[in-house]
Image (cartoon, rainbow, N blue to C red; front, top):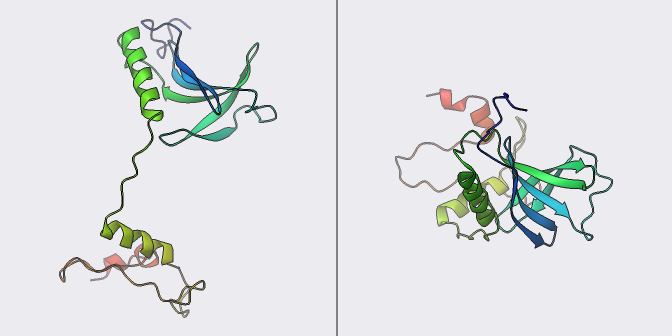
Length: 175
């Protein structure tokens, strides 16, 4: 692979931070051409039967990550998720190791649940209730029988709110 622009000759193959998780053994693999998050299945989490190249979402403490099913002779099936490719951004092995350790630390840290503000709650509720309807139909939700109410205006001079349907059909172009 020498001479190929995606190869970083300053990097070597190294396994970083592999640890036992409920889904299998998770860590980062550094190579001269990629830095990937790797999940080797444990006995409880087999991958047999999943086609190579299939995507599989795995819940990690910080968030869900979409992995790709791969297979290596002598190892068998495993999951990978690209963190960096190509790896020309790393000037040396220590920089790649630091990035791998930081990525693992971030993914293993529980995401902080920040409460929504009143405005964010109103927006969430508005879009949960919003229904699209054809011309001539009423604007009531079939589930509740109620008309979705628009968000409360922050000020009287706030811009006019419109539904997704109005925005898609260019209502914002009308003055």
